Length: 253
Image 1: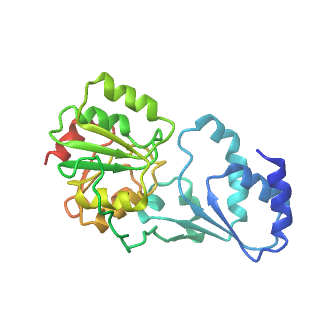
Image 2: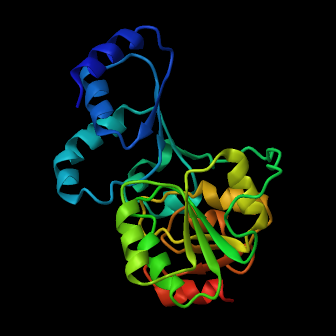
């Protein structure tokens, strides 16, 4: 909540011909309902509200009013549109526009990093509650390959502690890397593993980047865009969420 945000928004809306919002962002919904702009509002719907169940009940009347105010809703995959209870109510104003990635792969660095040069699976992303990284670490106990985890985030110390407690030598935390380093890691990986287990994971740009490098993809079936990008048996393997054994078997397939 930010009242200075509200004042700033009020001043810049006077210059706007169209407003594009990224959803969910409840404070912005409240601000736009209060300001009642006289221009079209388009929302890119990234995710249902998944984790904040109690707050969602309080927010529901605001959400309903806000969605009535929208001219168009963009959803990033037909899978998410089909499985979202919220979006079902607004099919008449919803359009599917998938996310994409720049297909120009940057020049690879000449010097190799200290990370393994082969025989590893790659995860790229923020360390958040819905990314399934605890499941990935549990799966690593029965995987005969390295797993390189690129990124950082709120769960980093917890994940490092879990890895240490299990005595795992094949899980390597690479931290944040440059764009060049990231594509170098993709280029030399065995495949991409993307174990997100909740609908907060709406799409998975990491899967697109893996496909750009012609890598097999491993993801979980959560009814979102992850299985719009990764089609089981064609681009990779789709396994159940929160299932370390299934994830391990997919990597060892």
